[in-house]
Image 1 (tube, rainbow, N blue to C red):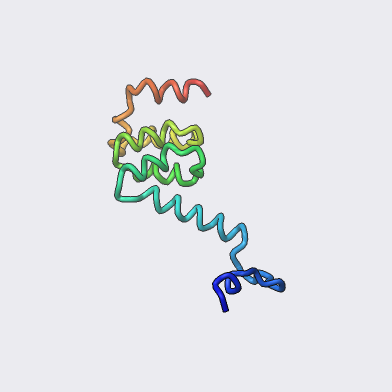
Image 2: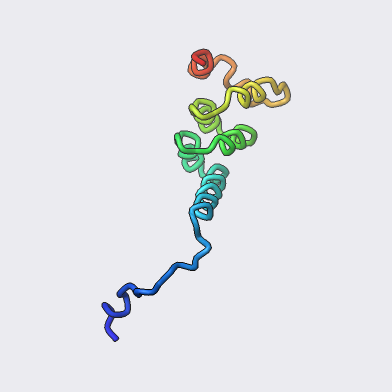
Length: 113
């Protein structure tokens, strides 16, 4: 048998794979969630600035991110819910809130809404 014959599509081949669109969507979301907690700040920054990052991931990042620049990107992401940011800034126990107390870019972002 030749390589060409081996790779030729089978006429009666019907996919019996359980890998449907919801499977791939779940895999995509798992990948994004794992990237959001990657040890490299550059990877987390990509997730924080990406317009396709799910809101759920952004709010999770808001709770744990310790890099100031990455956290700022999370706060500035257009998909970041105002309610989540309000909860974040009202936490007196979180020292990270003070990082952005006078940050005009963030203030303007939420003034526009």
